[in-house]
Length: 588
Image (cartoon, rainbow, N blue to C red; front, side, top):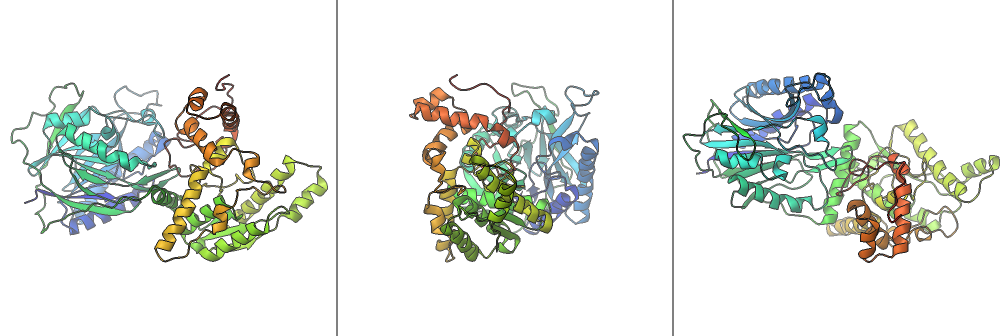
């Protein structure tokens, strides 16, 4: 007979909404209890949302987190759920923030996990490994824990761990083996990036083998500014068997019955000496036994893996949806040119919010082709969004009647008039403006400040141009497979990309072919490869020099760009931080 029914609550908290997040814990715990779960685990920092960044320095925020944890334990018992063990992430503190003059080494803010049972906070654990790379700055915010909490619940010993503890060998998982636990509960706020789900399963298998125990991994979903979390929760045994796995980008409760051997009846004493894993073991025996086992079996199943394009599309739609919803916007507005980028952004917005909440503005100038206008109107018809036309040539002519401009200045004027129209509609009607530039253009500065770059959010900010085409093709094929109408006109996909700011203009007038450009940008930006490495990889030396110069001198534009969903290992902004004033040049 299975020894424990566990539920992994793959849910979507909101940063700073402590009451709302606590209410979500109560709702999902009720669902878990109704399904017979004896233990339910929620993501890292479930009560506060993640990442909280400099909110951690506010004493009032930490006090609110700790108070909410105690109140949640009381409320769960009042709900009749006091016999369900609930593991939940929150922010704790045992000293002043590191920014305080009163800070004491070894104490401070803590990224914490708690087990709630019987109306009480029965056990707590402080995250040991603190990531300080990519989007993470946890050395800035938290002090690492130095002990592993092991909870005796029924016949099983359960270790509590948090996120990064899983990504590094040694520490908590080595201590878990020494403690002889049967189960490690790992609560996570692990941001999405392409192919990360392919890394997680082998990683969890390594940690399960290291601990000699089953690992229950729960990850949050949802968008938070530039980050999006994909879930992908799972349970893996010590010998590497995948028992159950949730889908990506969906709220769900993964419930599964576990076969766990009984714990040693004579565990090592409380607070034993440290070993080479540099952690003490703190043991807590819960007074309450697990609730009676429900009829079964409960089998969580293993969610099907999806293609890269489907995965990215889900990330982009969820990222946009949550940015809009969590920040209280009613609708979005974008410039719809008939080109591939704005077409894909419009389709993402419709999928994320519904067509009734998406306004698309065609803003033709004297250089806009008839097919571009037709393609924009065609997309609007296919998707049902709110489509309007605002010709810009009279406004451009009014500027030119009062200013003597030529060449690039006239091209940029057109882009800036379009930006003014979008921002005016935003002010007038309350829409969030979406900008539509892709990562390739952002990398080389192929945009107009205060023109096509205006906006409050950019769904394609971390999407290279070649991937934009792949996403468009996939989305149309997916629609056809489901028996629906493809949202993106075929002409928007196959025609040469152009800003249409002068007669006969195409992107390749200013940029290399995107297949070549994206290969160089991927090496330089995502891979941090230098000039010599890129040339050794087969790229033309003169082209490498040209592209790298464009990237380097466009840093000031990127610093002013709107946030957008991260999907790569090196997104502009949180991941890649370079000085604007910088004279270092590759190969100089």
